[in-house]
Image (cartoon, rainbow, N blue to C red; front, side, top):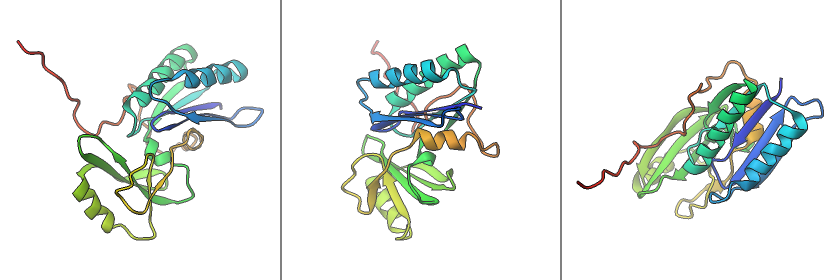
Amino acid sequence: MKILALELSSARGSLALRGNDDGDVLREWPNDRKNSGPFFEYLAEVQKQFGEPDTIIVGLGPGSYAGTRISISAAIGLQAASRARLIGFPSVCAIDCDAAEYCVIGDARRQTFFFARVCDNSLSEGPTLMSEAELRENLDKVDYKMSIFASERLPQFERVVIRYPSAKILAGLAQDSHRSFTPPPLEPIYLREPHITIPKK
């Protein structure tokens, strides 16, 4: 079974293909939110060389809303053409690290941050929105041996190490039939209700 994984929620984009006769394939690149060209180039290359996948898994964030929307849209198009199984999974559960349990924080804009705890590549807490003060208080309660990751620089918080979600890990998780995946229709993990600007009358 060929599994294609797409991950664009952070500053490091990645694409992975597992189950190919010639071995696993991994492509990683600096993910510029304003230029998705490299993503589509790698996607076309892998598709041309290795054919259509049987399963497509997409990282749903939280993280870059634009990047996640792009990977979801691409996956929907591929699924329509290939009839592959399409599933989503939280990107924060596929951080490239050796820790079995860890915390993830991120800047949610508007002076808020998110906090999530991951155990065995599954969410055990969150993601939850917090103010900076609330997040500091929460992190003070985290065991000092626990790894705390972020996919962007957050120098105001000590102990935080930059790590990125990985399509390679997502592809491996897709092989686990006991996990709870998100079925279509896929959408990014929303940390708050969408903000809608009402035009003035």
